Amino acid sequence: MKDVSNKFVIGLLVVALLITVVGTIVSVNKLTLFQQQYDFITGAPVSTATGQTNLTITSSTSLTNQKFLIDFGSGNVNASCDFCQMDSNGVTASTATTNGVNTSDGSCCGAWNYSQTAGFLLENTGNANLSIGYTCSGNCTYGLFIGGSRPGGFGGLEIKVTSNSVASQTTETGAADSASSCVGGGTLYRSGSWNITNSSSYSGALTEATGGLGEAYYIQLSSLGHWLCGNYTGSPLMPDNSKDAAVVDINVSIASDSPATGVRSSFTLTFNGTSQ
Amino acid sequence: MRDGKVYYTPSEIPQKDFSNKAVLVMLVTVIVITVVSLILYLNVLSKVESSVSGVPQASLQIQQVPPSNPSSQGVVGLTILARENTVGGNP
Image (tube, rainbow over all chains, first blue to last red):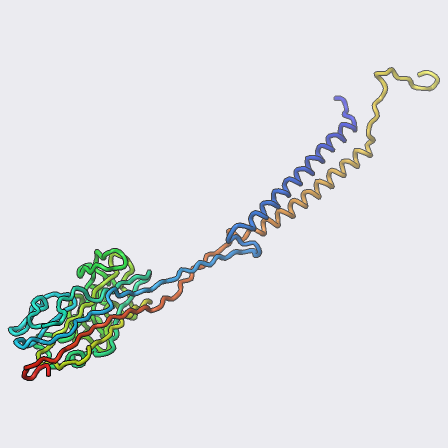
C-alpha cells in the first residue's frame, strides 16, 4: 500500500480539529440555552440542590341560616280558648285539647301569625364537616318568653330539628338535599341523625332526661343550649350538597292566662358550627 | 545522474510535503483542543445538571389550615297583647 503524505495527514487533522471545535461550540451553546430556558419554568428550583413546593389547602367552614326571623306577631288567646299553639312549620299538633286549637285553625290564636311556613334553615356551606350546637340569649324559657300556665301536654317553648330532605324548605344555597343530613357519625354522636342533647353520655335510651331526643322530636328550649348534630369529638354534618342542611322549628303554646308582654318578647338562637 | 546532480523528468519532480515535525505539532494541537473542548463541555453540563437536579427531588407539602368555628343567628319573637274582659288571663 502506498504511504500517504504528511500533507494528507495534516488535512485530516484539520478536518478533525474543525469538527471538534464546531461540535463543542454547538453543544455548549445548546446547553446554555437549555439552562436559561429552565430558569423560567415556574416552580422549578434553580438555586438549591433540592426543590420544595408548598401547597396550602384552606379548610373553609361556613354555617348559614337562610331564615333570620320567626315572628309570630302580636295577638292574644281568644276568650273561648285555653291556649293557642303555633309552630314555625305550620304543622297541626296532634294533641289538641278541647279548648285549644291547632295552628291551621287559628280560631284561638287571634291576630298572631300562626300560618308560619319555615323554620331556621341551617346549611353547611363550607368544605369541612361540622358539629352544630346552639346557644340562646334573651327570653329563652317558657316563663320568660311567654309566661302563665303552660298548657298541659305541650312543652310551651320547644325546638325540633329535621333534615331538610324531609322538611323540604326551598331556599338552600346549594342544591336541595335528597338524603338525610348529620348521619354516619358513629355511636359517639348518635349515628342516626340530628339529636338535641347536652348530655355527655351517648348510651342508653334516647330520651330527654337521659341524653336528648333525636331528629324530628320536640324538646324544650334550653337557656344553656344544646348540641344538635355531633359534638366536640365528632362532626357528622357533611358539606355535600345532597345532605348538608336541616330545619330548626320553633313551637310555642300560649296559655289564656299568659300575661301581656307590652313589647315584643324575643330570644336569639346562635347556631355554632364546630369542626375538628 | 549527470555531473553529480539528480535530474527529474517533469512527472518525477517531488511534491513539497510537511515534515513529520509539523504533523506531530498538528496532532498535539488537535489533542489539546479536544481535551479543552471536552472539559468545557463537561463544565457546562455539570452546571445545567445542578440547575435541574432539584426537580426529581422536589417535595410537595400540603398544609391544612385549621378551620374557624362559624356561627349564624336566628331570632324568635312574639307579642302578647292585653285582652279585655278576661277573667284571670292576659290582664
